[in-house]
Image 1 (cartoon, one colour):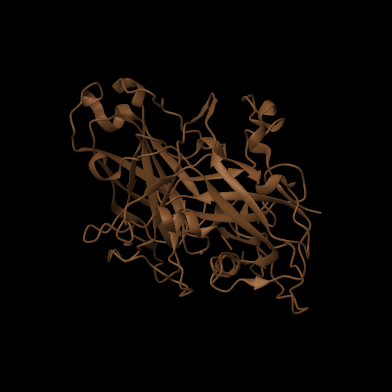
Image 2 (cartoon, helix red, strand yellow):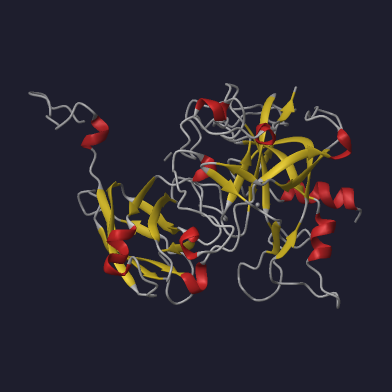
Length: 417
């Protein structure tokens, strides 16, 4: 199979890679005029267990995996809530020591509805306190995409199945009256020995291969984007990626590269998504203007290639995938055998075809009629669960409006005229 045809095939198949009863006499009385607050909810609570000589606040995220996509790296879901447990509470008298613990502290999420959830998090470590250089001060800020994920030296954590180490799906059930029941005694584990983050987030800049412009025309040739690491020293954002981590996907841990879509090309990390942004200026995604990872009920239902519409809002992406040749070369040893450990790569190439898809059903993306006009972002999802997207809040003049230094490369968009 030629590089171009293999690439076109892989780009298409890779995508296949939180939606009063009135009586006849006096009305019911609720404690608030806001009906949403009158809904029955429960809580998820338990303990953090931390084994680490490093110190920092613990950040725990709650993901709704029943109504929203899975969290990275498996999906693109965003947390529905988070909580921060201060380091002083977590480590107590040992805060100023290097004792490895274990340390425990309680956590809780309230106002949780019935459903299925996952808990993930990290210790926002002050690596500068350890004397290493370069280093990161605690830099978690949930309000911006560029400051909301772990970096080098932070310690990952999750509620996991202790028998296999896999993330647990926690279910908040209902009683006979339909009221959600509390979920208690949940443990979220953090281990420096097994889950310390090895690299910064995969911050990148984009150029167009061959010196072309940033437009993709319907009926035109595919566009190849070059992604190279972008060092950012723009307080409060510090990212120093040296390379991209590439690796084979081995979800079943059998030591053999996976080929989930059976296209003859092994599945690899990272993954790339080229997604349509909202038509309004800014960073909001098309059909998800409240940023809850659920398509807006009043979102656009684009015409499909077969002339039909399915009556539901679409998640519009372009058919895009990594150019595999340099990745496969890097992941093959001198004996022609696959390297099953991550390898650094200084550059990634992304081929984007003039094909638009509705990926609201990731297992069966549907081709759309033509290319919806507008701006498209480029998202990179690393095997560590860390992500990066351009454009982002570092794009001038958006950065100036929120009081942080701008980085011109972070304003890149792919335009469909």
